[in-house]
Image (tube, rainbow, N blue to C red; front, side, top):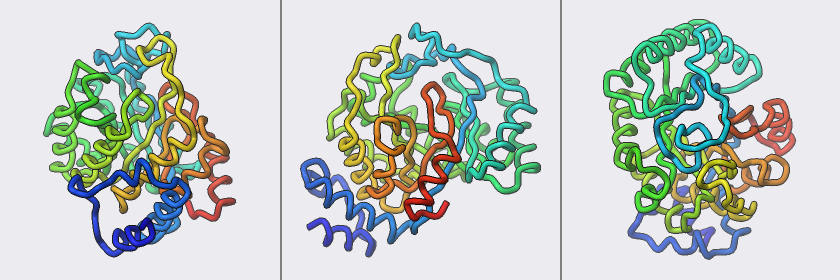
Length: 318
């Protein structure tokens, strides 16, 4: 069954909500991983894309996302700082380019970046475009207005990041200060401005497998280009700080599930790789073909040199 379905996907079929998708939840994991790997290899090649991020503005976020250490609603003691200076942002991009990253993103805490902070970041992107020729620019600045997306594109940004986090059904359990629809509106605005979209979510927040399926299907329906998959690292002080961590098999099944439903997208490992052996090596044989490398926002990430070595030893091109 898996081989035939993978063949059909490689030939152009796309699974939808009308299909019986129970096999993704209940089917044999080894077979599922193997066919997800084959779909990835046939439709995306043998390349793995590495990207890096810098925390451009940290903490004191007005939103109440229950997983997040940077929310002002949660007493986590997370780092706080105002927007980084233009020179600091450009230097972070330069270091990432030198280390061999394919993409670089400035990520800012808060509902939206606006005013002088937004203007300063636009100026930094303009300099990055001029001074860092071998790296693509991404941005993650919350729920922006139409004209702000236009400004990002004109400054040299090519991809915008806006996680939907979970399913529509489950979203009110995760956040109450903005809505699932707000997230979808953000994706549509970014696309209208001519930007690619990076949008995924977090697993391990008490959601069901059906919620994970729904998230993957929503991202497929919006033709998202890059899907970061985060496995929750419970942070003390957040409402989800006491949740149990996921098993490696759960993370691998999720990666395979997302590859079956988003066969041509970047399925990008993000936070939570420390929950897997060998920095998540097995996930790259279960459908994943990209990763965020270096430090995450509030959890430790993987060293870029180690990632490059691990991927090359596994037979991938970077």
